[in-house]
Image 1 (tube, rainbow, N blue to C red):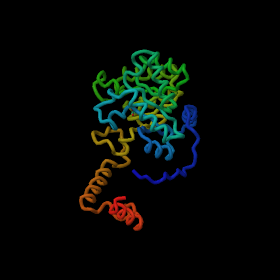
Image 2 (cartoon, rainbow, N blue to C red; image 1 turned 45 degrees about the vertical axis):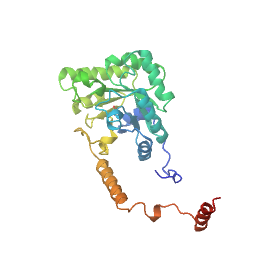
Image 3 (cartoon, protein in one colour; image 1 turned 90 degrees about the horizontal axis):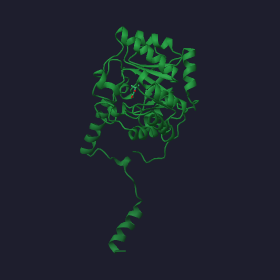
Image 4 (cartoon, rainbow, N blue to C red; image 1 turned 90 degrees about the vertical axis):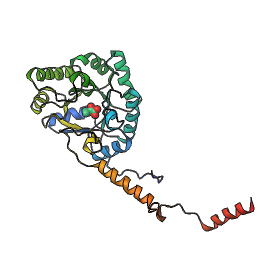
Length: 296
Ligand code: KIV
């Protein structure tokens, strides 16, 4: 880590993105961009690049904390990473993902936990997974003034029920249920909806039926916006890459290259070089040595 004074960003100030901004974008046919972030530098870079929405996703559990799925993620994990993101991003709409068991047990707990994302972690809104079965929690959270983003289709917190990370809504009845869920979530007050891993034609149809914007991940180009897990996009997560991901970089490969170059340099005495050293004036060095010799 550098101990130099920070260089202040020269990026032009952007207007804060709000839930209304997203609604207007949909009305104007402008596509919404959304990515996940879990730390300060990533959030800063993304915000400066002009992203509309940053989701502090519970995908954190898999791509940052190394769990096999999102189920072990806790409220404290989420709040810790949300705070870091909020320090980095000033203009993007910030959405905190409610972790497994933070909104399912009771409406009261759901409201209390949703509130913590805004009160303690600098988020603007929360996201939670599920369809009609979540209407009670969503209605209660929205009634306190907290914007809620819905999430249907492949809902990773339910992998044990749906049998793994697999596409949803591929038969007529399942597609119909997803459409009904989407409409009910809109009626309950959601300001937007993530559609994950469902057929493109179904996602397009649902998006056209809704006034609230949809954000697709593995749901094709007919959604009102797109979202990806940033570690997939950057090539930072090596365990698997879903079919719907486009890799924009190979940062895992780049990190390994940099780390092995560092190890080679250290072992070969090529690092640190003269330019990395802290200097001390000769007279001060002499004074130091003389002080030791004279025992003072
Ligand atoms: O946790 C997450 O990153 C998500 C996105 C996949 C939408 O929910």
